[in-house]
Each structure stands twice: as structure tokens, then as C-alpha cells.
Amino acid sequence: MNRNCPGCGSSLTYIKGENRINRAIAVEVVGVHAGTLFYRCPDCGHEWHAWADPNVQAKALPYMRKTEKKPHGRPDVSPSQPVWHIF
Picture 1 (cartoon, rainbow, N blue to C red):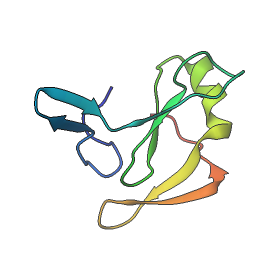
Picture 2: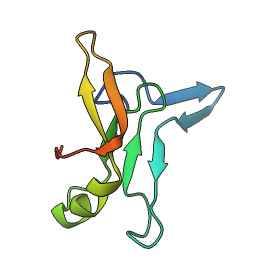
Picture 3: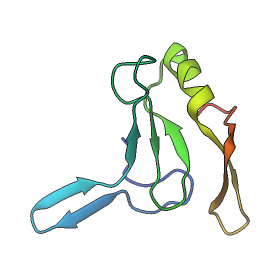
Picture 4: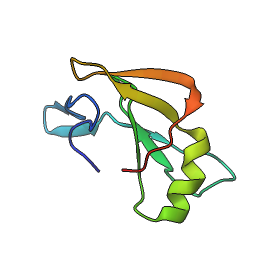
């Protein structure tokens, strides 16, 4: 799992005392894949695949939002369109 968002570069690790908490949102789609299908950044909404397997990535595509990077590095998020790129 990435420690920084591949979209905006923000840290995905929150440290409180001795505890490290992963801030990335793990998205699971029941009936499509058992376990995390992809991750979403809580800051910018960028999404990336949890698995390198192309078969699992193909299952994730219809559920992922299309993101495009803005000039300042943060992506625009359009929740109505799927993403068609593979990391």
C-alpha cells in the first residue's frame, strides 16, 4: 500500500502516539471481489488499484471514478464517470 497518495502526494499515514492509522479508504464491492478492490484518497478522491492482477483491475474499473490532475497537482473528480487507466 502506498504511504502517499499517487494523485496529490498527501500522506496516507496518521500517527497518534504509538499508533499508525492508514487514512486511505479501502473500497470493497460485495459480490465482485472478496476484500479490497481499490483505494481512494480521503483528501483528493484519487483512486488506485489494490491488486496488480489485470483480471482484478478489470473488475474494479466500472466502480472507479475518473480523475484528472489539475495544474496544481490535485485531480478533478467526476463521480459519474469510470476511470479507464491502469496504474
